[in-house]
Length: 118
Image 1: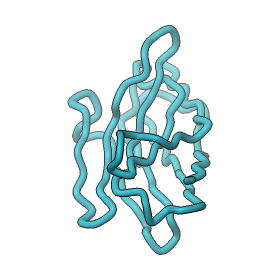
Image 2: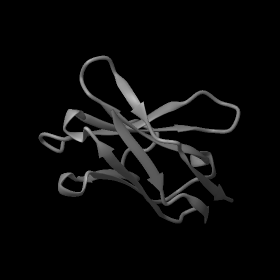
Image 3: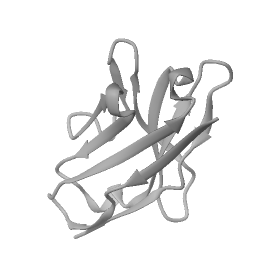
Image 4: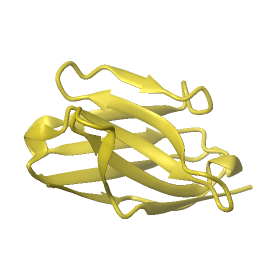
């Protein structure tokens, strides 16, 4: 089992920045890839980006590319989502998830609310 706890959400004006943190505990060595997802109000959950634990490579959705950056501190079992140039359409509940390589993102955090005002 892997437990994930997100933090760092809040209210920010358009153009501002926030950094989300995902702290992992439990059998974290099983987590091959850590992903960030979000669910805007009234919409389906969508992929934001991911980072591989072995080589640190990242991949982002087009909607956040060049504005969001994912990084990790494997020693602390922590993953970050730095969000810059935020837009009102970035308003969502943000989730981190762990992919152990045996069936997709099997472990999820509880989510943290990000609200971007115009």
